Image 1 (cartoon, rainbow, N blue to C red):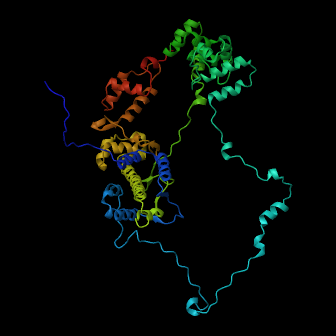
Image 2: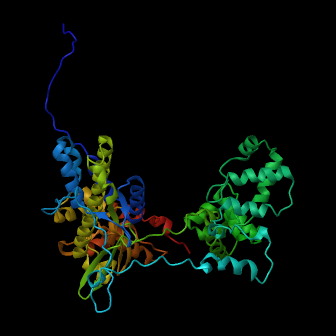
Image 3: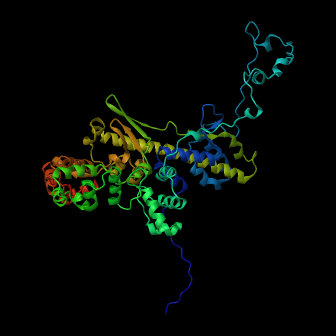
Length: 530
């Protein structure tokens, strides 16, 4: 029988631990330009020894001087080795002591008398100039005099100091769907109970304009009567945009046809009773069921195609996304130039005013000295990581440009397959480093603005054994479908045969997957029956 007991056991194991400096390096590398600018601003606010460089900046410490300061402190206190390892510097020049260095004040130039000799050498009996008498006119505030006595109009005391509105007051805010509907509802004469129920209905609309809650749930949650909720829904469905407040696609399309005075027409009958046949493109069947000529059916279908199944998205969409390129790639002569877009990034400098706090003769408190050393080491680590991020992105972009010169010259059809692993092996880093370097970053090229990840695409077996990028194969499939005969659309087998005839080895299942990725319907759904 085994007995449970406590034992002490000693073993040696290797464990990978990410230091704070390494974590920061990984974080900085995957930030784009806007995120990096925000991070630098936050670090400047948190770290007192870190300043933003300006044209009129005062005394500044170089990283080498900071390293020497930390080395001088380490001689007496070797326990601070971990702090010094975080600061990456090469040391100050020989014969230079940062602790004893004093910035000399600029000496005032000696006055010069006639003849070019300094005044101190020309005569030692020069009397000290008397202090100039105060000009009585300097005591008069002429600006206030003209404002108070020469103003052409009367100015009351209450109007002398007027609080001007902020400029932000004049900035327009985006109009949401709810705000737009409520502004229309405020001009419609309604009873208070119905208006409250309509407000509850507007609050339950999704971004597409559809009603997400049932009328019973709205009546129960808002303590409205069912009759008031029904009347309120009818009023909301009369508002612009047409189709808002619908509970499904069929009702949404019917509301839009009704707003065009099409109630009871061919388009109304098709949407109301035969919407499934529209999806299957059974035009002749629609003509037979409605007893109408095929020309009338085609005209009605054209009207239906111009309806908007998501009417509220106009006021609920996120809008266009603004992108600021992190890299500019432009051609100069026969070569391409790569330039990082870091013009508006804050340029960092080390504040020299805290240097005296590292000297124990001037700052006896050990905790204060340790805190300042820690802040200097953190600032050095951040500056090192930002510079390393810059060099890594430049190396990645240089490798990408060397491989994609045909794309930069001729366009997307000349894109070559390229994997992240290949770039990582070329520049000598881990693939995860390349992945972080291209994450959420954009490049401005002669062919337009592209995400850096856009250039990476796996290869599909192409003509003569060469690799064809997956993106190009998808474009070829899409182009074939766009040029097909609508009455006899291409099947996946036919598209596969055409690609194989061009030397691209793919299977039918692969083509079907590409088509589904591009949200292209199947052959049966694309067929248009006359």
